[in-house]
Length: 293
Image 1 (cartoon, rainbow, N blue to C red):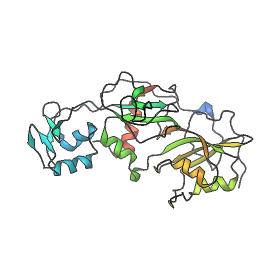
Image 2 (cartoon, rainbow, N blue to C red; image 1 turned 90 degrees about the vertical axis):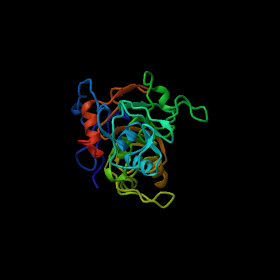
Image 3 (cartoon, one colour; image 1 turned 180 degrees about the vertical axis):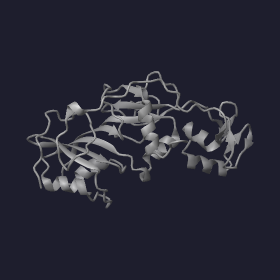
Image 4 (tube, rainbow, N blue to C red; image 1 turned 60 degrees about the horizontal axis):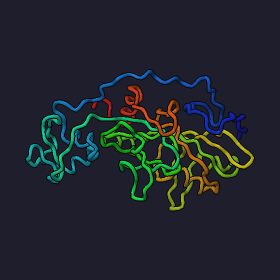
């Protein structure tokens, strides 16, 4: 097996998707520049729309979950129970309720946040039930009900998508769509080639689950006592990378998500957010199987 290439000095350089061999050195000068920000009218909710799509975009449920609510007779349109799955509504004119609670029609919102350490991934507005600050508390100026797409644990930093579009979030997280996420992980102890190959090929976790092979793995930097690794996975197990580190006997000391698909937080200070660019949103919708919907 070939030796590792000389790593860059920084333990957590900006992400650039790898396309080369098993190990290699990235060229920072080749990093793609972000597309210019443009105002975007992202799918305004107007005109005739399928009822389950309205429920999903309002964050009530996924489309499939909305279909279940409709079939169960829990959805009303203008005061009348609707059970037909093909029903179309105008969300700006019709009164839609679930369990007699009005569903507010809001334009969809798509954000990327650079999550700091010590913040909880929760849809609670300010703090969770233990009094810890939530990611929603960082979204100054966003009044709509939004929620994180998946979770980063309390001490994991980096790219976090936030939206009020339940269908969009559900499809991005669905295993069949295999949407990649890229991380920089600091493992305790120096990883030898055997440990790296185990991470790459898949490891058996403490509950017996065998992880899928990683999409890409690159050793970023060795220190005297630790190893920084960039790895891309398209599996979404709870605390997966930390559990993989424990399984090979090298606990993860620091973890940063540097990309969700091709969306990065390279231009964002920690704790800040921005709206997704048109190209980013289009790519995510394609990956989620939502193109043309």
